[in-house]
Image 1 (cartoon, rainbow, N blue to C red):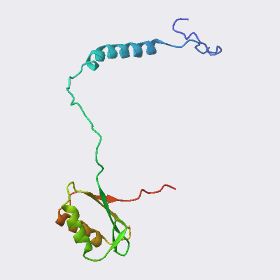
Image 2 (cartoon, rainbow, N blue to C red):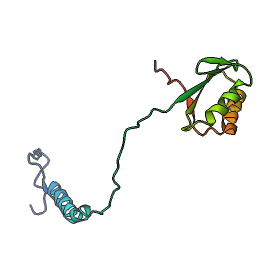
Image 3 (tube, one colour):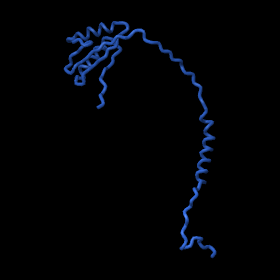
Image 4 (cartoon, helix red, strand yellow):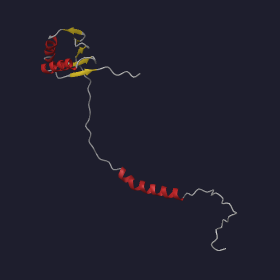
Length: 141
C-alpha cells in the first residue's frame, strides 16, 4: 500500500534507544564560537599606576578621655563623678593640650538626649575636635 503508515494498528512502536546528540552538538558549537570571539576582549587590560602605601607604627599612644552619663544624667570623667560646671572646666583644659586627646562619650540607653546634646555642645564650644561615641555590642542569644 502506498502512503500507508508502516506501523499498523496491530504493531507496537519500539522506544528509541539512542540519544539524539544533534541539539547538544549545535549548542556546544555555538558556545565555542562565543568563547572564541569574547576571549580576546577579556584579555584587554588597562595600565594603572597605583600609589605606594607606607605604614609606620604609631610611636605614641593617644590619650583617651571617657565621659560617662548614667540614666539620671550624672556625669563621670574617667569614672570620677563630676559636679555641675566641672565638666566645662575639664574640657577647656583638655582642648588646650597638644596633641588633643580623644573624648569618648558613653551614655546609658535611658539617658535623655538633651543631656547628651549639652555635653557634645560644651565639648564643641571648648574646641575639642575628636569626639567618639562608645556603645556595647548587641549580644546575640
